[in-house]
Image (tube, rainbow, N blue to C red; front, side):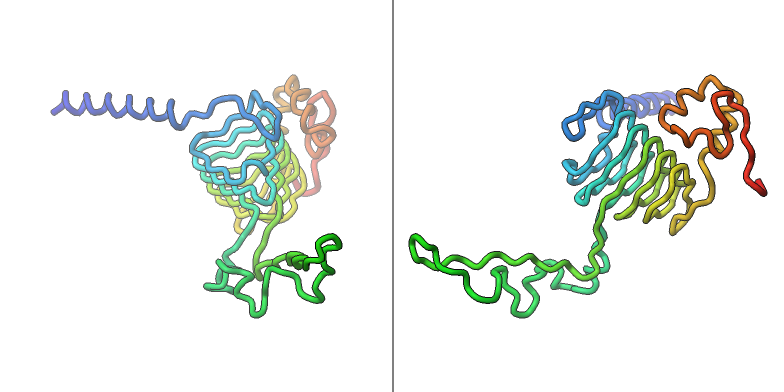
Length: 249
């Protein structure tokens, strides 16, 4: 029994290694909007819908089992980390589905007296043949309750596991979305966002400050993407010294 268990343990470890290497290991090298991204990695287990509407920067990492629905446009800037089991969506249909019921699938054909052709007076006949021209097509009215809009995630932001980024969301650079958060709306750069719904609970530069004080040689790398924001609120200039703290901190 001991020898059999040892054999199975070896086989299972080998099987996991093979599957990870062949099916789940993210590899460097992607392309987005015609631009080559040599330092970007996306796990093969991540599902991306409407990838033609997804714009990626370089140095992006998108881990395992994420869902990105980009029909309304998703922009993920340089250096963003999307961990695992994260959903990024650009539309929400659940309210429209409940309001319309069975009419949802056929909308707007379910509306009384609605036709794809335009109403009003018929257009004048073709001036050459004299035959009547078809009425111009009407723009379908939006489904009631339908929400749609783009998502923009700023450079070097971090999206924690099991988070939801909803339509019409914009995160500034350097944001941290804590695990399990539901995020909708606009958030300033360096915001730490937590909860359902997500709210700002801190400034990501506070956590970076201690490292930059101990390792001032890292400050040029930090400032290369953080720009002027690198000196506030806790780190001042290239010396790596602590700046003035906010009242009550």
